[in-house]
Length: 346
Image (cartoon, rainbow, N blue to C red; front, side, top):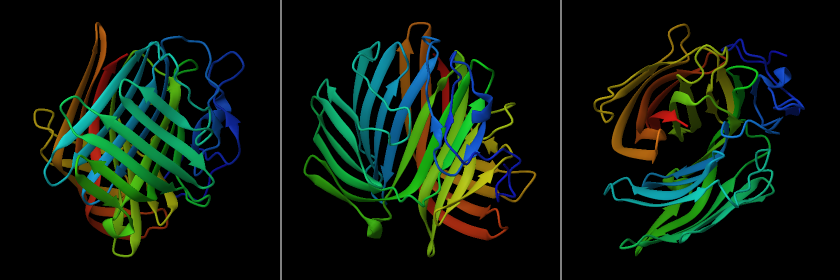
């Protein structure tokens, strides 16, 4: 069915659906978007092409805590990092596990806990009714001890962006992007304690991904959560990797309601200096016209012989204009988030 959204042509999915058919190929009925996660990601076969990840980023006005738990068949990657927005101090712990031994991830969003414990790094995403409890502990050699205890609200009525992107019958990806999730708790880095609460505009974002990928890919991803006056604004933008599929991973979540954007977003940025402002705009509609102004660039390179990945992730602030599916315009200013470019041969 086509839902209430006037900003997209894409099919809306409103009931549970399997991502794959019995033989492991794409289920055609799974292609489309939904406002709540209805996909069961029953991946099988295609060793080396399957990619599963759970990425969390929790932001406040003071800093960002990021957690990655990824199984890309031949390796597992577990990372936690914290960035202080004022001092630009960045602390990170990375664990790489051959063949992703011991990794376990659910087929559905919030289907089970996600836990990692190894190489001096511990974290857990513990699922409870309409919330998640996040715990982190690590110490990097020569660096500070980092601990976190956070509670993330996940109200059943809160809408999110969920989409199945098809490249072919054998290559496809389901992603659930969930932002503007209210968060409270604290992160401690050494002797410094950072409070996460409503007064500090604290929100969590989840990127849940399950699919079978081509060897080479490039993507853009932009996300932000914050307030514009009394309105809670969530921005979710994707680019490049969805080109030619008839589906995008872009939308606005305003006061807990999704406006899905069906047209491709035009991304303009300087690949020689990612810290220069980025421009994001839709040409066919008035869905968005934004400037992203970075204040920090994180570069991550994962060399794996002839395989590998390079990510330029910038944290910064979004300002400009957005328009929801009802035609209501919102002016936003300095909403904290990130924008990134990722290139992989994996």
